[in-house]
Length: 108
Image 1: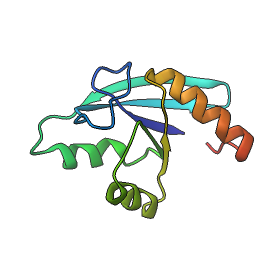
Image 2: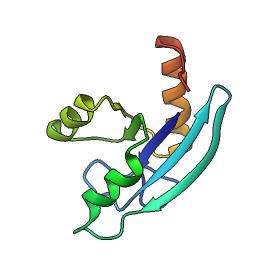
Image 3: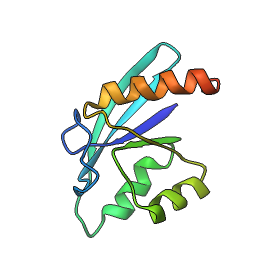
């Protein structure tokens, strides 16, 4: 399962009010994070196009905040959105996985 985290530096999660310039993509399994990859968006002009290319196979997005329009659009596409107060990306993934394991089984 792949998880995308809004991150400009590949380690911390953006503030809900800052512009996302990249995403940390985490490939996870039952035992935790298998590998990660930080992807920077090329430019504001192509940000939506770039984002769609690499977020296409991610089933979850972790964020510190999101407007209702984006939240609704992602949910319509079947993407799970996890809002967290964590600032460290790996801590947020662990919190998401813990909650997911409690509420539903992890699907590969």
